[in-house]
Figure 1 (cartoon, each protein chain N blue to C red):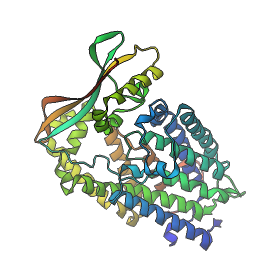
Figure 2 (spheres, rainbow over the protein chains, first blue to last red):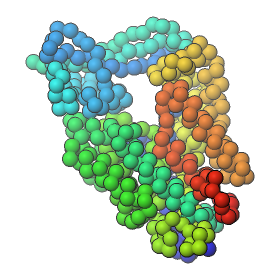
Figure 3 (cartoon, rainbow over the protein chains, first blue to last red):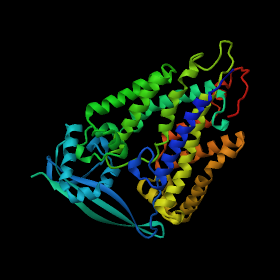
Figure 4 (tube, helix red, strand yellow):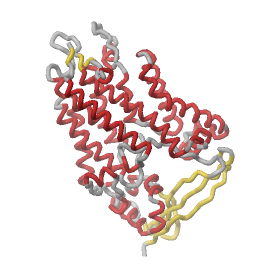
Length: 150
Length: 284
């Protein structure tokens, strides 16, 4: 037993597929990430210079329990409400306005009320140097921004 | 035009639909949880995407993310049973898409999930086809063949494969034609390689050869629609194998996309394995 579609039922389905195809093609060739869900499928699409550097971002914090020492803290949603890539995607804004980092301390307190609160945060970009497509074993750290509770 | 509307067993569509909605439950509860945590992030980090500007979507709050999370789960559990396919399916589509929007409107968009929107938006269009028999068989046990169901599976196939083809063009656009000779995979292994693939960093040429092979496979991916049914399934199995190796190497898997690929497979035949059956094999 076959349940067929009528011509009008087929027509609007064809129209939907064509519209979606236009949006996905547009996203790939002229759009950007903010076109989601039609944004370009750019996973691993950038070229990395075989003799350049691989960047990796991390944060260090000072806690109320030990305010004199910087310790590395995870950039994860269950710790600060954001993940590492989201911090990396905002690195220019953070550099211009380090006070944004205070909101991470607030989110951390809301998500982990039992942890000692953070009284300082700094964002560091670590550059792993490459030669001929492989790591040299050396790295260089850049301090992007720093916030301290006053 | 009938290529877009093959008459397929409704049981295949019903099984695919159940898997999609059970996957939604797993996805929301365990796999894509960053949207939920954005309820706790300060609105200063909210960067509305085009969709949010168009629809005036606000920054996340804790009540909003809880509503979307549990709304997705509840509606998906109903839709997975085949009941209220239009209503429950539409609620899943709205809640899941909004929840993912919140996950991506804080500075980082995941690039693997857009195609799943197609499955969620189109599955509710098969609602009426189930009026006669919810699990796709007539009273005397014969398969009901549906063009509405075939359309959904075909559209899911098209957009699942399109992601490979379009990702190859994204590499050309953002990485340039020289992407194949760049250190992109070395970068991925440095950043998140598992212990058993770190040795690849001592053989960068092998990583570059893999880039050539992947790029060629992605560019050629639409040819799957010209292949015979037997080869089409083999190609789908090969993509599954590719994603399994990727997961073992850098612990990245495009889960919703893997569910989409199931639309290529004769799911009702797999379900019949081991059971005596007179159901004829139907080629999609």
